[in-house]
Length: 254
Ligand code: 13P
Picture 1 (cartoon, rainbow, N blue to C red):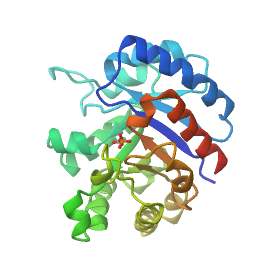
Picture 2 (picture 1 turned 180 degrees about the vertical axis):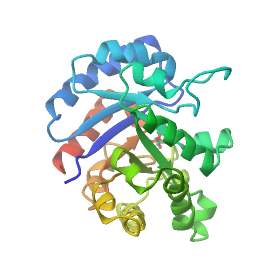
Picture 3 (picture 1 turned 45 degrees about the vertical axis):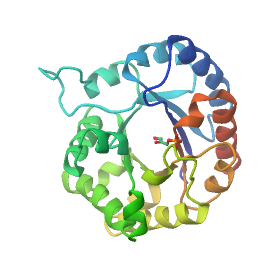
Picture 4 (picture 1 turned 60 degrees about the horizontal axis):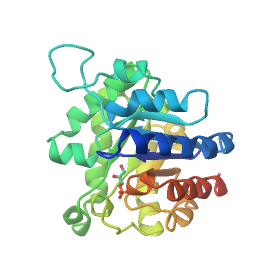
């Protein structure tokens, strides 16, 4: 049985005040649902120390929005997985479409980030997803499977025993155009089928989150789909009542 995971991705948002307000608001629902749902927030690196002190002793998990492939050295501006781990993070998002797009991160480079996170004891959250043009051209699974295959080639299929996949269609991110539950479920099932060609055990155990304009309204039906194991939430994770309602939707389907 896969335990649902509801993860916020704050992206480039937040102030000292909002970080404090939101983390305090999320500790209670995270504690209340801890037996049934994992709740996590991925914050900008500069706020992770604050998140650590506010979440201490609670069931609220947290992570980084990215990580570097190196452990240390002359890489100005980067954060190593070891640094992220030292601040008590459980997760590191890798390969978000905004990183792939704005920073030209290739599938192979993202796989290296995945490996670096895993090697440091973090749980990588591998984001995959197609553009609108690729969706229209019927290339969704070609794109998504290639993004996953690059990780399998570098790290092996068993690496997904300690990882999470997030399917985030780029056309749905921040657009208000949530994928319908049927469209999302269909892709999630095909991702699981692809994993199954390497290992049934891994396919059955891997959590696959949906992300892309997932909100308090759309979460209940999305989370009721057989192969959707929770959500990676952008905008709605910046609003306490919305994110709390999304946690409740995951709890209802756990
Ligand atoms: P939105 O929920 O704002 O569409 O963002 C989704 C996302 O990119 C999460 O990583």
